[in-house]
Length: 317
Image 1 (tube, rainbow, N blue to C red):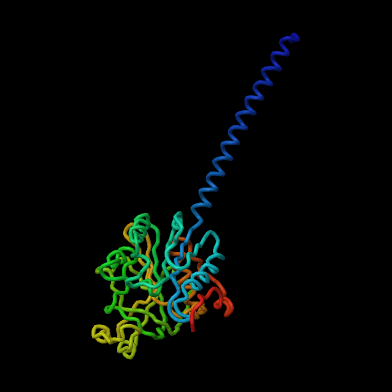
Image 2 (image 1 turned 45 degrees about the vertical axis):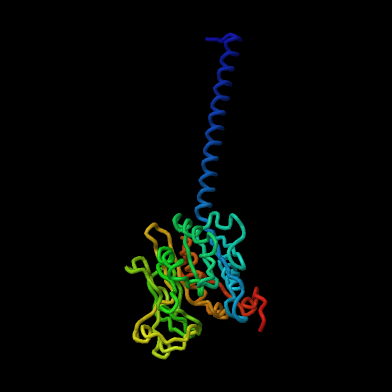
């Protein structure tokens, strides 16, 4: 059967129309699939990226002690080598930037504590409590673990499981022997170590201690318990009577809502950040606090003597 010229034209037009329609459908499907893939990729990348905020306190103590800014920047230098982790350091106390905590997975305060603690000034306690309510990890280091019993103490028990209480806890200069470690992501790759520092102990814990995992544990000698402590000098009867008891100088806490907490009592002496195992256990802890994956052998980061000299606060000798 032969088609007329007009019939052949109609057939060709129909075929062209079908081809164009299928081309449009294919193009739209491919465009939709590409958009979905891009959205999934962005979501995955966003989910993988963790933000850690370090708050470094104002300068205090003689040179080489309480070097909060230099210590925080050193930790940031190491964390910057970890894929998927972003670290922000705010120096000289509480950030004066409105969006400092936006997107934060963990906030850590490394600063002087006690009655002048940054966490209890202005509305900071409410800010931190709101972050904890969202599941953001909260950590405090060295003097930053000390908080007044009636102003911040109850919150610390909820946020990190414990705190340093004046004249209940103690702060001697001593050299704990950290020889055994809990099976925890924070201790990955950490080997036995010791250094002389103002390692606090006898924290005020939650009554049930549920959710608390001791990370750095050692047994003070009777000479350490007998004092003197840094301040007040002591000794305290309840510390002396606890002869032979293991003490916890660093701990991890898992809150009922899934958030995490951290307490680290070392960090008085800046030079101790040169100890690879002290450095590793804290770096691991910062990742864990932010729910980032801790490498199987922990965070590897070399620090030189020259690195330790960087960013020190100008202080009178």
